[in-house]
Length: 411
Ligand SMILES: Cc1cc2nc3c(=O)[nH]c(=O)nc-3n(C[C@H](O)[C@H](O)[C@H](O)COP(=O)(O)OP(=O)(O)OC[C@H]3O[C@@H](n4cnc5c(N)ncnc54)[C@H](O)[C@@H]3O)c2cc1C
Image (tube, rainbow, N blue to C red; front, side):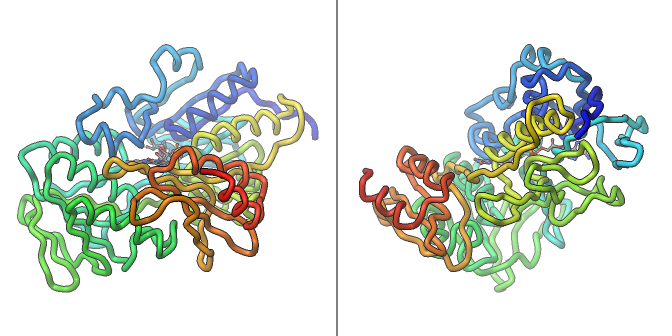
């Protein structure tokens, strides 16, 4: 393919994936213009501390910055912060911004991540919070640290669980309400979802499972949460942690395929020439697992952002070789009640789950997930070194038997 013009790159989304894309472009020697558009006013910052050390007050919010100011300067970006992209026209290669100023690109990286979902009947009351942004974390942290509020967390996913853990650590009375009978069942399966849920109860959190939210009560401030089983939990602070949706609203009408994210090829190309997507917003075919997926975790956003940047250079013929598929082992960690949960790979319905090191009762174990004779995932609680030892196996498509042999040979 003939080389493509690549002088103007636009990155929409000034967070982890967007930053890593910019860094990859500069690492590959791209000396053209990079405009980074970000709806938030902050320089790119890290989200994991927002439910952990920033939320608890242990870290000043500034510590969550992803890079030092001088490191940004070196990237020589045209930063458009506090500005939202409102539409994309691939025919004219233009991105329209909410300040009315369209920008033209030769290459575009879509890195608009995800935004929190709300409850259908969520009221606008003081004391009701979501947690996605630094500003959310600062506001919620203040509320958790003033007095000893009674906290109700709606949703026992990873963010909800981390908020519960941090609030408990701050001495709050905490209840967690989860509609599913087993939390995290989609990500971890029933048995391991239950094992993680046990951590709440171990730590004195009132965990209500298999029940929904009928309403959040209060006049100016929140006063209680009413559950669908008729019970009421008094609350000074309610944190709604019912998941996120990929931010694709601005791409409606662009012709890009949107299906729970921006649908990309294996190399993260989103369809029109020079358009790539990365991070929480991207849905791509992961050849290593033979399935299409969208991943909402830090390592994916970081590595995929860099991959999109490198592939943009390859697409333009500015880097040797063709674009390459992003075949990766998904990974996440979560810190709860002083313990580290890690998961490598992908869990699916019908997986065999086997604890191969330690025990669930001791809250220190490694469990393998397998399907069709192949190792598909590895979960660890308080066993970080052992878990990471399985990365190589997952990346090489190891069989279940190979993985069992590895487990037997390791401790
Ligand atoms: C509280 C919290 C704790 C977390 N903890 C962990 C953890 O422990 N481990 C882990 O693996 N992962 C964790 N994650 C997940 C991880 O932070 C995300 O996967 C990662 O931030 C995704 O990066 P991203 O760049 O794809 O998207 P995002 O970080 O969502 O950034 C997208 C950016 O794009 C901006 N944007 C959106 N639309 C537009 C638009 N139209 N125009 C301009 N800008 C726009 C948004 O404002 C946002 O700043 C956590 C997330 C949160 C919220």
